[in-house]
Length: 136
Image 1 (spheres, rainbow, N blue to C red):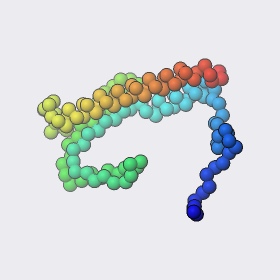
Image 2: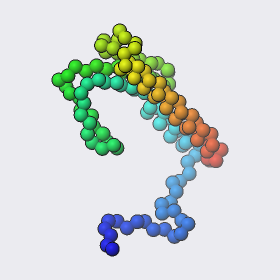
Image 3: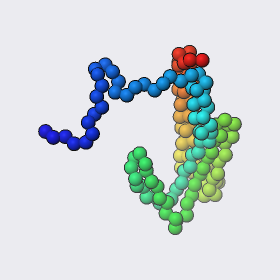
């Protein structure tokens, strides 16, 4: 049977194909985490009700909005460092807190906050586990 494409990397048994990255110091680790947190300061949840077309791939989806249709939206931005929460509500949804779109958006905001909390706890746990193993 013939094969095509690049051959798989080979290494002696028991040896990784690629060398491990160099060890980081505590200061480098702290810098990496600080930069990562600074880049994700604002959590944005936007719910838009309008005809859309979805394309692309699962890794890189594209969404096109029908520009001729009226768009109804609810948008929330949460500043994770300062705790500020700002929500903009289309007048269509403003007067009825029981509106399904508002309820869906509120559920998405709560889920997003839970995901962020869980991710931050995971990062903190990871740092705690590796901190003493990293050079000062």
